[in-house]
Amino acid sequence: MDSQGAHILVCDDEIDLREMLQEYLGRRGYKVSGASGGDELRDVLSVSPVDVIIMDINMPREDGLSILRSLRPNDTTPVIMLTAAGDVVDRIIGLEMGADDYLGKPVDLRELEARIKAILRREAISGGAAAAKPDIHRAVFGEYVLDKDAAKLLAPDGTEVQLTAMEYSLLKVFAENKGRVLNRDQLLEQAHDRSWDPFDRSIDIRISRLRRKLEANPEKPEIIRTVRGIGYLYDPE
Image (cartoon, rainbow, N blue to C red):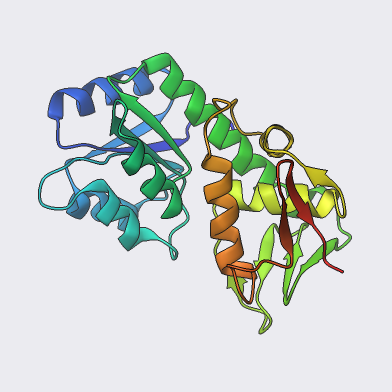
């Protein structure tokens, strides 16, 4: 998806920050809506498609994590969480609940725009799979099927399992590397994610989320296995 015309929703109770982000992103060709909290955010989502949500964690009444919990899994709009500098616990919880990225305050505007562009690129890659080729290409994850042309994960009864853009990208990488052990750097690079700090365990959190959706027993995974000290292995056999 081209950034021009992409709809960004900024949810933050700090009006100065909200207006600054709206002005900055608006000047760069984005359509930007603002919300001071969960109620206004849901009002915007109910009337207009949104491509990326930027949401503060620490808000009065209903905090960002509670709002995110209410959105997932039915709404998979990519979410960038804004967190207090060094607030690792909130970052981990946000990722476990389905956030796509996080950024510490005070916000670096250029880095924020780069994160938005990265998410939009991932969305375009995921969404363009169906139009790229008429043939059906599928990968089996236990009782679930990844339809790469339709960019969907299908449950045994044929219903779609909601995935974030990053979760879909990771499953696609595993499907394309069946039987090959991939380390964290390889997974993030091939999934078109940003470069993470070498001590950042966010990839492990995302793998755990996928296991909860795919594995009969997420505590003893058989589909996406851990190779201790190296990385992860997709072994459908």
